[in-house]
Image (tube, rainbow, N blue to C red; front, side, top):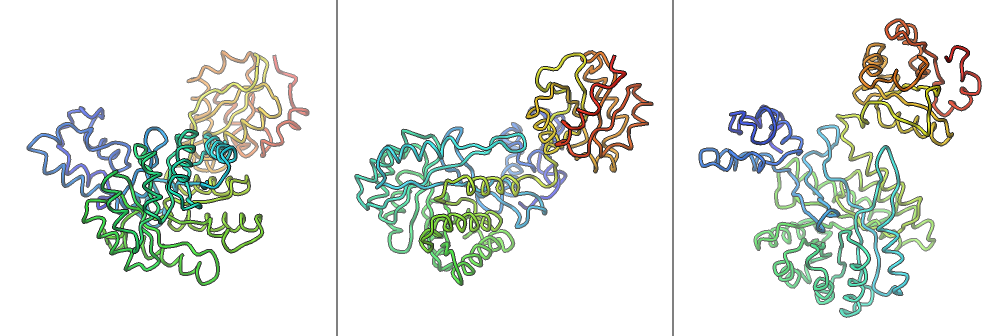
Amino acid sequence: MKLSSPMDVWKYLPGTNCQKCGEKTCLAFASLLLERKRKLSECPPLSEPRYEEKGRKLAELLAPEVREVQIGVGEHARMIGGEDVLHRHELTFFNRTALVYDVWDTMPEDELRARVERITNWKKFYVGEFLRLDGIAIRSVSYDPEQYRACVRCVSEETDLPLVLCSFEPGVLEEGLKEVSGRNPLLYAADETNWRAVLRMAKRYKVPVTLHSTDLDMLTRLALTFSREGIDNLVLDPGTYPVNNGLADTFERFIKLRRAGIEEGNRGVAYPLIAIPMTSWMVHDDPLYASYWEAMLACLFIIKYADIMILHSIEPHALITERTLVANIYTDPRRPVSVEPGLRIIGNPGPESPLFVTTNFALTYYTVESDLSSNKIDSYLMVVDTEGIGVESAVAGGQFTAETIKETLEKHEVESKVKHKIMIIPGLAARLSGETEDITGWTVLVGPRDSGRIPGWMDKHWPPENLS
């Protein structure tokens, strides 16, 4: 992206503040464009002749350095690529690494369907959302086009997740593609031996294609060839070698490609990158060791710089590690993860139930909420808006204060929920207790520093003598 501030974007907008985009000002719309929360098409004046040139220039300037590629259709479609920076702290990463898990065409049908169902339905609750997996790679092991097509058909009946069709045999690929061409699958892969056939296929079916070569010059030539033929929905595979010098060389190729695309502005290789950590299964005989090594490789290339990966192990130790790291790396570092402030009901509280106070930093909130719920403590939990900052930092920074506690009490009419006027603040906010009592008129009890100790604290301190 060539623009770095809302003012830079605003210069290319009409500047009329017409509000047709739904925002109050063009500058507000510019800020959202920069964050990719709005689209240029949502500014109607840009389609007018007098602003068309500005619109074309702005579209060019806002385009990410690495091209975005969509895989799949509908609500499960995944965008990959689209990055502007090498390091998330420079701006943020936008499209998280897609985790795709394999099936193969020699599996018995019942095992195939069961594995697809397990991949499709896997989820893990983490900091306020359910983490899920992104797609299924269908590998041709039989090299039989009809058998592969039957496998693709079976998988497509079981899932709406995006698909990656995997074979270096064009005839096999096309048979599978005929079955799911309307679902925009990713083809894997074209190389220097089969590229002509795969190119014809991509042009006919208009689907994204992976290009494979460990020779970066060859990979570049393949990308330029496909691009000249009008195929820009490309994914680059520089090879994934799992051990020794092969791993070092793989890492170096990923770094070179991403630097060339972002720092050097080489549009010929500015495409999403795919890593294949499941190659660890080719060199390790022990399934457990192979699974651990695959997860390690996945973590490495989540950070540097895989936009999509094909993996094999669907054991919990692998899935949780990989998907959680993706969630963390692709969280915007400029904005703490937060929840809506307000009053939460835990269990079935009554007017004499305790009132706990916490911040709206998501990790803090969900930890406290979980500790209360799992211990079946019927209570109210008042969440103060601290701009998504945790308790200790918010106290030090002035976001968690007696005043903000009072504002939350009043805004959410907490006094109408409980007949006592007693609140329990976190132990890390103990120094606020006196001032909070003075400002709010409520009695303040200082809870434990760790919410995991709330049950023991409750045994000693609740209900207090002055509950009524």
